[in-house]
Image (tube, rainbow, N blue to C red; front, top):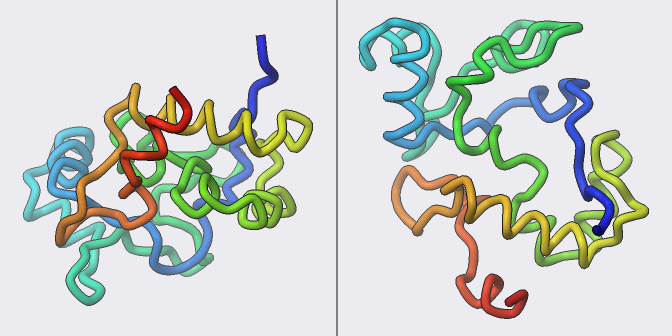
Length: 154
């Protein structure tokens, strides 16, 4: 059995920084339901528009508004697809240099597993969990994969 290429350490590094937590229509519904709000109320209190995308707001500390220091995601069961998919983003799957760079920020990435194992496990994970998106106005670009990537691994 191959080594696990990733095991979340709940460090929160991926929850920090402006702009990357894009909310798809499905994410908005799931998060609103999780928070026991209707979607417009959830959007009003938790989200903002950036260009043509809707994203979660960040707190004054620079983390996602739902990140709880020492615990991790405060809405884990309702979290967006982009959060569910980390670190298996398109760039990290297709570019070994990107995969190497995330290792300095994400202690959950296992360098000993190797990039090939990371790609194989990542693509399998994304497809198994329904996290691969078709190109579209609210699709997180990091989750739009070339279907040939799956075939190359088969």
